[in-house]
Image 1 (cartoon, one colour):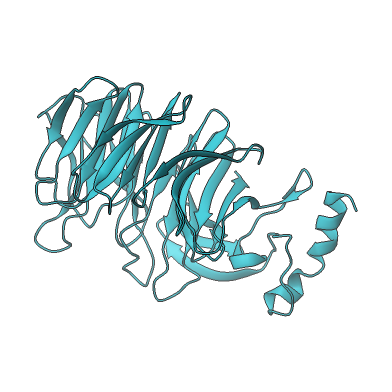
Image 2 (image 1 turned 135 degrees about the horizontal axis):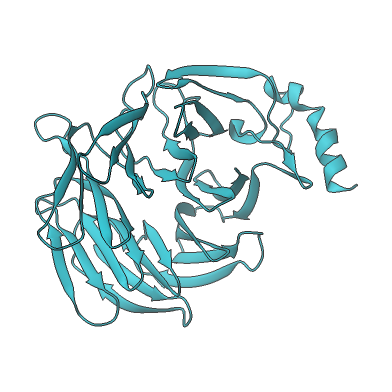
Length: 359
C-alpha cells in the first residue's frame, strides 16, 4: 500500500488510540486539545496522537514525527548536533559508548567514535566534533574526516556544556571554580574566559562571542547569563536569574530556559533588556536539564516532566507573540537540535530513539 494511503488509513484509528484501545504507528495531530497550560503568550496546546502523545501530520507520505534511528535495549540516546545534512548524537551503551551519525533523510547510519566513559553534550562544526563527559571528566575532539579522537582535555571534574565555532571550542564545568575555558583545536592553546561561574550549564558561540548560563543554587547564589569575546572580559547580561539552564543565541538575543520552564531572552548589545516569552507552568519547578534552540521565528525547548507528565515534550514558542504550543508530548524527550526545516530530538525509552519533526 502506498505510504500516504497507509497513513490516511491509520488516521481512522486515532480515536481508538486516544482511549488506549489501539496504538497507531502513524502519529497524527488531531483537533482534540487534550491538555492546556497557561503561558506568557496564551496557552500551550496540542493534539494527542500515537506513541508518547507525539503529534504531527503526514508530510510526503511520512507521518510526523519520523524515527531516524532505534537504539538497542540498554542503550541511552543523549544529546544531538546537526551539520551539513548529518545528525550526530551521543550514545551511552553497556557495550561501548559512542558518537554516531545519520543522514537527515535517514540514510547512512554510521559509527563515528568510541569512548571509555559516558559521553554527554556534543557540538559540531565542519570536519570537527567536540564531546563532553560529566562522569569521565573530559572534553574530546573528534576529526570527522579520519574518525579519530585528536585531542583529549582531561581532569575536568563536572564538565557540562561544550560548543565549537571554526577551530575554537569552549567548555565549562559545575565545580566550585566554575571555569569557562576557550581552547584552540590542534595546538595547545587555552585561556580562561571566566572563573567562579557557580553551577554552569548551557554554553553557545556566535560570531567570536561565547555565552553561558549558570544555575546558581536557587537561593542565595542566583543564576546568570554572561558573555565575552576575550579572556577575563566577562559581561553579565542577566543577573539574579532562577536556575538558568539551556541557552541559544540569534543575531540580537540570548535565549534561555530556567528551572521553572520560563523562557526568557536578553539583548546581546547594551543596554541588556530582558524579556519573558513564556511564563512557565502552574506546577512550577520543571527540572534543571532543559534545552532551547532558536530559529528566525520560534524558540524550541525541551520540557521535563514534573507532577504532570502531559506538561513535557518539545514546546514551540513564537518569538513575536509568545504563543506556545507543544509540538511533541513525550516525557522521555532528552536531546534537542534543529536546522532550517526540521527539529531533531532523542527519547530515552527502551529502546531509545532519534526522531525528526518537520517545522
